[in-house]
Picture (tube, helix red, strand yellow):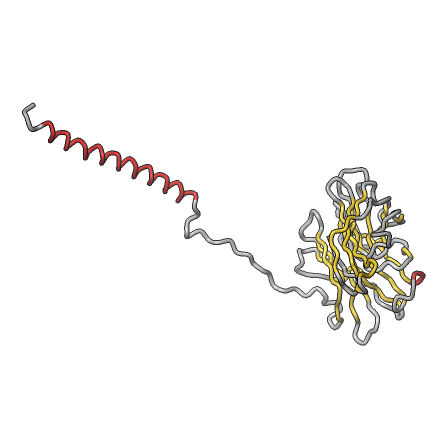
Length: 290
């Protein structure tokens, strides 16, 4: 090799090495971008839409009534089957009636399934549902004589249907002042599977024979007082948790209301000491829910 050529060769090879390195880096970066592009949904992909169907009137059987305290329940295995209930006031009526509506087509059409028409002074209030895992639907409402005429004139009224409101089987009335009931069913695989619980303003009761008869829980209290408004739920292991709101003793002349939960591990027979969730100042007991 002649003198003077060697530096030229070095200078020629070095840019080639730099170029090769830059090309490799570019390819690697491009490959990473391609992977990101594949993972990223294309801009042309339609964004999922949430569609709201048309309004459907449920109460066509009582079109002129005024409705209050509505509730809805869905069959656990058949999306076509729904039940709805509400108190209603007929035109010029002073006391409430109550209607249960059933749908067999996913809410497209409805018809009255159970109608408890008031006959003054009797009225029907506070509807609530709970489906069992086998599709049996339980229903409860309050039946009161006039304007809450006392324990002897107030009852809870239970019924159940196994064909989504086609037919109803009435249960014996449960006496007592049992305002605002809520019901739940144990659908676990545990010892108390199938047990029906009813939480009301004053306590909790349970039935092991499809609402034919009830037993009251023992020792269920909040700060030594009778439990107030609230519902109860069944946990996955079968324990029952009941929620209640109670007015405790007044503090500085103002009401001191507590929100508390109580737990039962023996099917509602007894409850552990209540746990206070919150305290707040209010002039009356509210209606909390779990």
